[in-house]
Image (cartoon, helix red, strand yellow):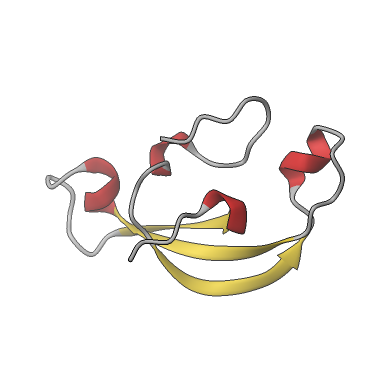
Length: 79
């Protein structure tokens, strides 16, 4: 579970959860580094789909999903 110090736009409820990249939205300035005075640090922004069962357990309806736009540095590749 990623717990960075300071400002981040990474929601806690998706940290460490398995999702699927569905859209590459392009490269943009990373707000986290700008907020800390560390420069623009352009990164790719992705739309990622998370099943509700992955986020809140098996009692949720399968097929319901949440889509969240996430920066490249927030993601870990799963083999």
